[in-house]
Length: 166
View 1: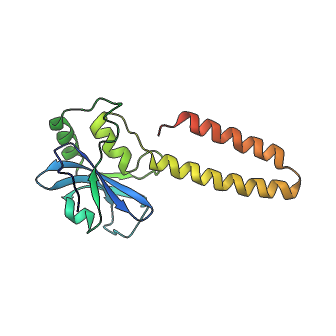
View 2: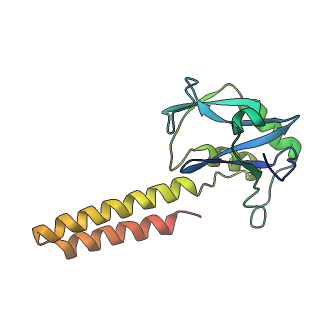
View 3: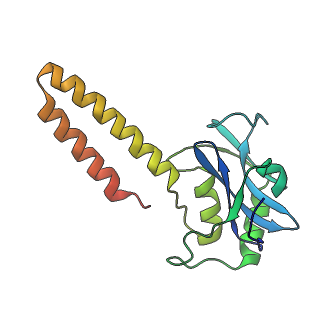
């Protein structure tokens, strides 16, 4: 279910509850993407993932998807043939999943642009840090240490935001 017709090498973004899933289109209705290594599709954040080639409609499972070559305006991409060749060479391999540094968005952007770029892992880390900061501030305030804890958390968030890309 989409309004875009994908071409080989296009990044495909799938709507999921609470996050987006990404794959790279390799032609003939197929994408290459990260999937739970143990075939349990209900798992949101698996420890190990397997790179699979599957029909786009199977991965979508009735949910919306779109072509989203999100960094084309700011980054040079590889040729479609090279992207497909690299993606196909990864099929069947198993990798360790890391929300902040090696998620499905990182996987496909590395294939397309030659560099892993991810927004959703960064956003998750930032949101988690904000929640941790709020808890630390509350605890610090009750213990009389709100200012030092708040400064420390603020410094850490500034460093995190400075080194990550959106």
